[in-house]
Length: 142
Image (tube, rainbow, N blue to C red; front, side):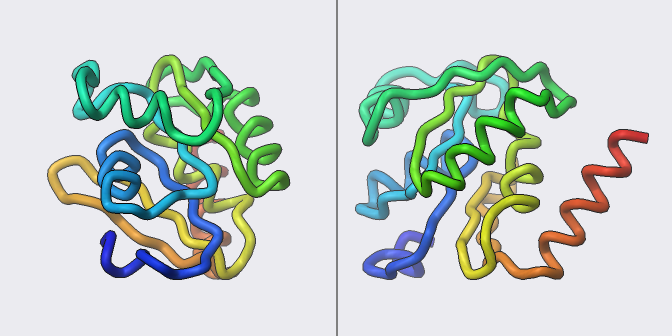
């Protein structure tokens, strides 16, 4: 994943502690990082926490309980995408933030998110990806 992105000039959004850590450690600097200081529901400590907390700028803290997408998460994500940079620390769970990112990220941008026990998923944004994300989001609201 790092070798695929290193040196490329793309608008990169990373969701998840482990994949964000691996990207930054490998010299790839995401424009936006969304994390919750948890990997597989366990608190992140040590090097991972230090690297994420120290990366780029101060974090915007957003409260988002597990299994839901709060308006605060949506609005903060949209603002960071408009500014094309930012770091969001989610108190609760950031897992569903990737869905929000894929709804609002511009075509051509790259979204990387962690898939527990699978690794990282890399998605290049286009209308088809956005439509699938929107349908998944709308089905959650029903």
